[in-house]
Amino acid sequence: MSNILLILYSNIIPLFILITIGIMLKKQYQFDVKVFSKLLFSVFIPVLVFIELYRVDILIDILVKVLLFHLLFYASLISIVMLFVKVSRIEKSKVPTIFNSVMFYNTGNYGLPLILVIFPSNSSALAVQVIIVVIQALLPFTVGVVAINSTKKSKRSVVMDLLKLPVVYAVILGIISVSFDIPLPQPLIMSLNYISDGFIAMALMTLGLQLGDINWKFHLKQVMTINVIRLLISPVIAVIILFVLEIDGVMAQVLIISSALPTALNVMLLDIEYNNEPEFSSQIVLTSTVMSILTMTAVVYFVQIVY
Image (tube, rainbow, N blue to C red; front, side, top):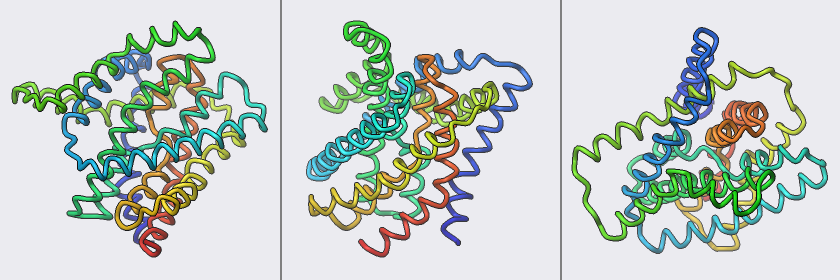
């Protein structure tokens, strides 16, 4: 019971306070959610990705194991999503949202604080989670963008749209800065940190703006199925992969916990930006976050007993 209350108090309630502020702002002032989305995609997200890359200082051994795990993990999730889409005969426009909702999860403002609470002062646990955060910061705005546009545009148009994204150049600059150990001026670092720190509040209020603007036609069966895959099936797959790779200890615990996190807010932001089922993705993000109160508690309890 204490674990449930801790997750609720430390992780869930702060998120919903900011979401509620967004809903209230929409009702009171009728803000245009597209303006907030543009600001996130043009400024906050590129800066966040750059800062995450710039801060990374990880041992190669840990990096290789985490990357190998995720390669197998994502391949398994893609197979499950493809099977679900085929069996359920999902509308074409919803397929990218389903794909992104299962593949991209809330490692930053949910997963990272949770890992710090569970593994206080454990540098190995933090190192693993930082790698996961960086992976999940990069993929939605590269692979996720391609997934959304692939159903609507030619391959050339998809590539051109990808190259227009500021986050692509943030990735390149981040990798160059880390690879060549390029120091940045302190005033610039401070400015970038201010922007990066504001991402969570900005993104959650944008979710609130979107929720305050939709006509709630709830896609119950599809939403719940996606949540089951994201919150329950995903950690089971993670356990199997870790067994095959013979990874255990703290690394295994962190990878399993992260694999069970709720759908990332970035999924909804992508759908708003590219006008692709924003109501559907908002419902997934909201319900998976609420359901994770129970599922994450169970997963944390499991890894602490088994590993």
